[in-house]
Length: 85
Image (cartoon, rainbow, N blue to C red):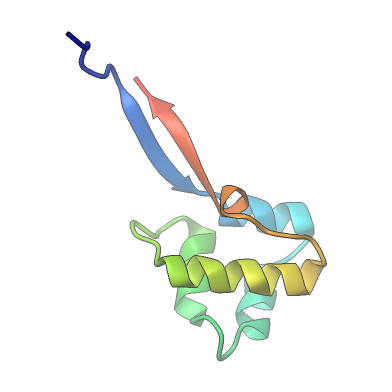
């Protein structure tokens, strides 16, 4: 018989860390993303306030960040799964 899972994972948005790594501000992304992604979504993700993230929004942000920086952006750059006890 299989043992029940001990612990689990929690997802965390790492958008702010990516902005810092690439030398971008949330303001710059929100301004460049006008008409692509909502300003509120950008600021909410940058503050770490978001409890839910729309996959379409993540895709748009990845494309926008790639356009602004010239670096490919993946889901792993925007989200991380952390093990909980």
